[in-house]
Length: 258
Ligand SMILES: NC(=O)c1ccc[n+]([C@@H]2O[C@H](COP(=O)([O-])OP(=O)(O)OC[C@H]3O[C@@H](n4cnc5c(N)ncnc54)[C@H](O)[C@@H]3O)[C@@H](O)[C@H]2O)c1
Image (cartoon, rainbow, N blue to C red; front, side):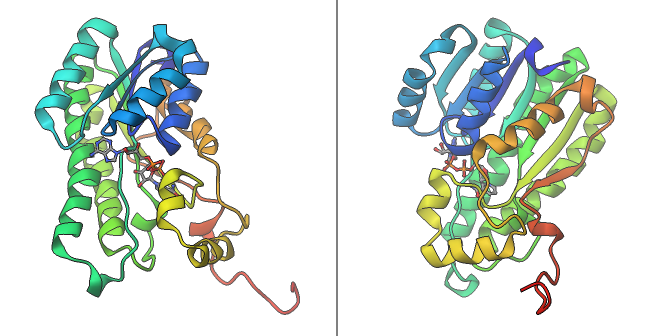
């Protein structure tokens, strides 16, 4: 199913990457249900995306609240249109050295990032299964693929999302549902503005061959492609890094080049 032939659910859809994907998909004629935990963010997104009101629903919801997610997904699928895609972008992050990370923080990050993505994926996939088609795109991170400093909880949660992507891709292939993930590198969003210090930003730029942060809109093409059966119908269980080359980099400096 092309992504403009049904509803795409986007969690964390009112800020940063999720907001860019919400806007980008609306601009291609897609219907979007954006879910987010912040009531202020929900109200702001309704205002800023008012031009797309016919194609957009924005609802306040915590992805860890299974009953609320199940109710919203069920109502959307019955009344707004058949759900053809899901992007799990809701997430939280902290940068804390491992020995300073308290267990409550670790649990909270796992709960939102891993269990939250599982709850929405399960609710959506149960509807997609009845139509034998659909695509799920999880937003993991390069911190789920590499041992980035200060990310014992966040990186573990994103690594778990990689494995969840693979397991769900294998199990759901037989019912026509593809499950893939995007691993962004550093992207300029409210989250990185809050978490990354000036020193952290400098370190990221040095570790990215393209020598800059990405913009949230730079994830749109990959997300659209993964959602669209007509373009990526034989792709499932994959993690695509959109990271300016971060995960490709080994020794990148030489006296000859500098
Ligand atoms: N920005 C980056 O550099 C970067 C890099 C790699 C991965 N990511 C991932 O991309 C995703 C989006 O990040 P972003 O940078 O756009 O951050 P962001 O903070 O701008 O957006 C995340 C959104 O998720 C929402 N959210 C948080 N907890 C929630 C919950 N329990 N239920 C529902 N919504 C909730 C927030 O309110 C926010 O609107 C996250 O999963 C993040 O881990 C970001």
